[in-house]
Length: 176
Ligand code: HEM
Ligand code: HEM
Image 1 (cartoon, rainbow, N blue to C red):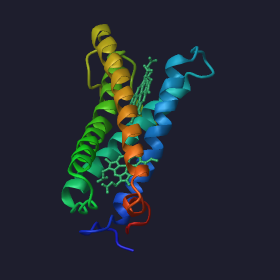
Image 2 (image 1 turned 135 degrees about the horizontal axis):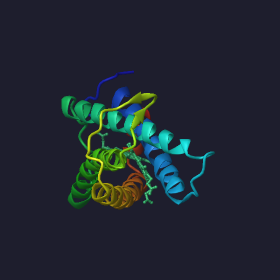
Image 3 (image 1 turned 90 degrees about the vertical axis):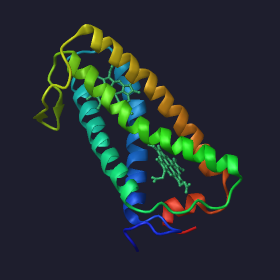
Image 4 (image 1 turned 180 degrees about the horizontal axis):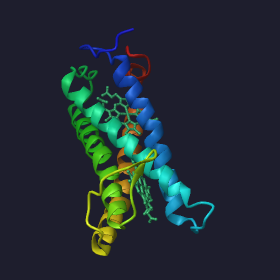
């Protein structure tokens, strides 16, 4: 069982990162929507801290994944019509961008509230001025980008499931 990608298979590192992040990101889309709509009180305030720590962990994983993606070869896609290959490339690129932009905007907006952003117990240096204008703009961006991320994921899953050629098997077991 190889850790590395080869010309025709996904290695263990890519597959584990893919599925851990897929679970994490889909869960966080639901969790974020929940906290944005809850009536905040003393007993649920800690959920913000959980959302921030999990979100920042996903940001770290996204960085690891992008470095891994750039540093290891990407298996050749299985034969498909040109438009499907092009669409898959665009969607994958969009997913990578959103996996950075979504947590970054959440982090900037949270820092702009003036409240410390704490990562699993460690207080991070502030990355934005305490400003209501920044807070509003970046929370709005965080909200819109999460909708785009959801749309990209739906398109991505539809594309992966629709193909019956081993594309999905390759991301699950490595080999088509
Ligand atoms: C992949 C990572 C993340 C995902 C998928 C995600 C997803 C979401 C979603 C769907 C919402 C609800 C948006 C709305 O309906 O307006 C939300 C809200 C929120 N997010 Fe994130 N988030 C992520 C990372 C982060 C990070 C890293 C932080 C801060 C360090 C953060 C801070 C917040 C806060 C404070 C809210 C509540 C905003 C409000 O009450 O209106 N998020 N998130
Ligand atoms: C049930 C959900 C999912 C399924 C069935 C699925 C399936 C797949 C498959 C089959 C591939 C390989 C495509 C190819 O060989 O061309 C792939 C790649 C990819 N997936 Fe997913 N995926 C899912 C969820 C997600 C989620 C939630 C994200 C984003 C957070 C994501 C991000 C990516 C990215 C960026 C790639 C590009 C390949 C790489 O990592 O280098 N996937 N996915």
